[in-house]
Image 1 (cartoon, rainbow, N blue to C red):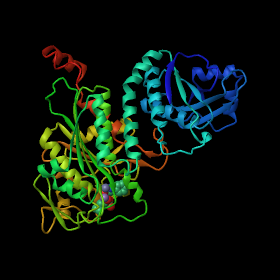
Image 2 (cartoon, helix red, strand yellow):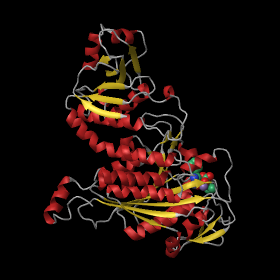
Image 3 (cartoon, protein in one colour):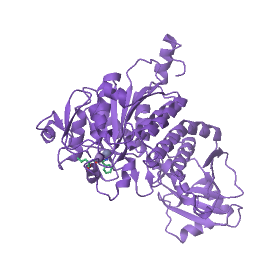
Image 4 (tube, rainbow, N blue to C red):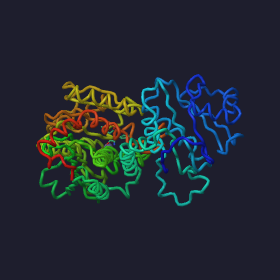
Length: 517
Ligand code: BES
Ligand code: MN
Ligand code: ZN
């Protein structure tokens, strides 16, 4: 989708999109077009249920009086609710309405809504972001799609008083949208294409953005003592990998980083504790956490975030074979703690055990956040509306909840507690990897907590939100990249230096404050 910004002018072809506020209150552009078309819009409204509410729309085809091929009214809801998310939803709904309509281009009128919370420049930029996110498609394997089944819409123009300013504002959002698409691609790829090594290769492309990328193979991990992660991958023909990505954007390159850790099970068959066949294909997206971490590092680097951030992803394929780990095996994790593997399908926590310990030990993080499609139980508890949040730090948990709300990727906090420890007691090792059916997501989080040492930490269980079965405002069905915009927002709000700090640091040490390499 080609996105551009221009000054308001009547387009001679394609669709024109105008906003209507709740109560059928026309925005200035809507009123202007209504007048030019001899009242077509008001007449169409009068004979429909369109009220200008959010998610409503109304199309007038080939209206007399203008040369554009259609006039589309989209409901904006109440003026006072027109925030950035509403602007994004607006852009998303324009794409949803017109993508397969036959139109090749559309112009969206962005008016000044006087009592709205954001100005029209921000409105235009966020509408463009929403349109970009919603127009994502993964179609590389469709070789026989008929032209009439392909999206027709190619160009989207946002018309606003100060297009240069809108373009500048969009330039700050666009890297995040590009990173979301990168993550969605990784997650959508089948497991014969994305396996631990090819995932690591994809992560290596982040060096183009200035991210330092290291890849550890099995030999190095064995030397370090990552018995928990390696045990999961030992049944696979593919070599397990651990990827470390570092973005040093803070003026003090040595200041402790915020660290993100991702579960990257490129395919989860369950291993010897084999999963049932139905829907097993879903387990290609069991690397969603790792893909979000990788995309996030790419976004932070691309927008030159003033933060030191590290991404660590544990990449394995969980397969049954003659070399696979057996139920009952005992593995020694990097932390030294031993784990009895009761169920080889509870593999994500084994991968994270070593990735988390490695991350906190090496980087001494300011905060450490992991993302994992960890448990089916979180889908039972929260469905697809919220991801699960677990944390040993109330401040960090609060910041994450706020960021999730702000970007429309909501979290719901669940408890940790010593009481749950008895469920993961083992008869022969320090712990076992499953805690029974009760509180399955909590015992998994409680297990992870044993590998974070004392770092301020949060765990996001994203099993219910990583893959969408239906279209939503900003996400076509399929891979969502849930968590990426949330964590980008968390960094921006709480972990990035302000311009002030940076200027001060620059005075002290001009060299250190120069643009990150
Ligand atoms: N990757 C799965 C969890 C999952 C399930 C993600 C459904 C997305 C959708 C995880 O590795 C797993 O198999 N968990 C088991 C744990 C159990 C054996 C304790 C589960 O949730 O059933
Ligand atoms: Mn599993
Ligand atoms: Zn899994």
